[in-house]
Amino acid sequence: MSGHVKVVVVGAGPSGTYVAGELLSRSPVPCTVDVLDRDLTPWGLVRSGVAPDHPKIKSVTRVFDRIAGREGFAFWGGVKVGSDVTHDDLTRHFDVVVYATGAEVDRRLGVPGEELPGVMGAGTFVGWYNGRVAEAGLVPALDGERAVVVGNGNVAMDCARMLLAPRG
Ligand SMILES: Cc1cc2nc3c(=O)[nH]c(=O)nc-3n(C[C@H](O)[C@H](O)[C@H](O)COP(=O)(O)OP(=O)(O)OC[C@H]3O[C@@H](n4cnc5c(N)ncnc54)[C@H](O)[C@@H]3O)c2cc1C
Image 1 (cartoon, protein in one colour):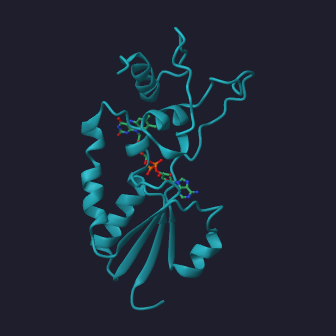
Image 2 (cartoon, protein in one colour):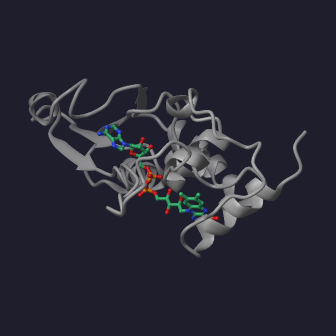
Image 3 (tube, helix red, strand yellow):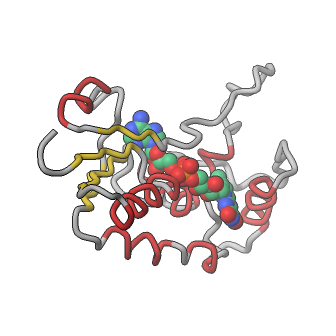
């Protein structure tokens, strides 16, 4: 180990960013923190999940911006661990590897019909209405009269609210 500890955090969502912030402000030994994300932009689901009509919740990104401004912090977007770089690549170049990758994909239910066109997981749909690059090619059929949301949690309510929002 050289004069300082080199940490890499995989995932630039709230978990990864707070880890970076705590390390940079409280670590008893000097450290640098490189944060990687498969997305080109940081802040995970706060950017690509939380509904656009909840700006107060999204405003937590101001805290993240302050963390990103600290000396020793670096963000690398568009780097997917598992395809662009491997875990072994990371252990070769860093002293510590932290995984903060959240819920990577929508969970499949395994029910007949979920593979049909027009059926998608909420992660895909909320990514689309938040402008996530990975969902740029999605064309949800919004010209029908009825949509069905399976589930009844806060994400389901976000999706229902967005579907009912006036266009414009
Ligand atoms: C639609 C929706 C609405 C929500 N609304 C609220 C709300 O109103 N209030 C609230 O408090 N919470 C809300 N949440 C929950 C909140 O967004 C999550 O709890 C929080 O983002 C989880 O943080 P995280 O860092 O663990 O994961 P994430 O935010 O998912 O961040 C993980 C990051 O890891 C990256 N990643 C994954 N795999 C790889 C890989 N192999 N290589 C590189 N990078 C990778 C991802 O791209 C992502 O940026 C909402 C979530 C959703 C989906």
